[in-house]
Image 1 (cartoon, rainbow, N blue to C red):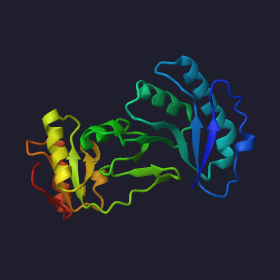
Image 2 (image 1 turned 90 degrees about the vertical axis):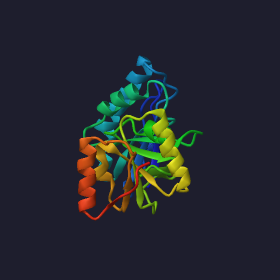
Image 3 (image 1 turned 180 degrees about the vertical axis):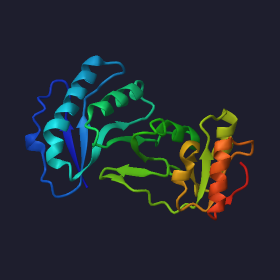
Length: 226
């Protein structure tokens, strides 16, 4: 896969013709929007214009080899990120897959970092620095598919107390990080290749219990409560 960077700062002309590769291999388009800040209409307007231009003038020539478009790379805790990502994703043609590249390598609990990178359930996310994340990883060569061999999953509910986060973090450490996390809202879409699923000890939601029953019916094992 090739990563092609396109400058799209307010001062840029959006003349990308000299940056375009041949259409012989998958391409991830990586936009450089400059040092935007939360609620910065100047940068937001320039970024939206650039994505409209890309969708109309560049993408039609490369749609068969376009892997996706990276709208953001960095810390998922950045202020104003949700509004920025939502606005930019809407500026892309419907057929273009937007991506976010999150760096979760800061010091912190596994659960807290997982929650930070999971705040955009409807946009594809690639993560580095978080071994419990079961999804796309990324490095300087771009995104790569999940290749971890962990066969045990821990369900992360949508609402957690700090004490519960601490218990799950301790469980991950006790297993020497040989587990992955799965979201409660999409567990049945994430358990492929998983043999054992652990949940917190307390009563689970009816939705989760139904999904766990399906997992067990398919031959999976429900592990002890955390």
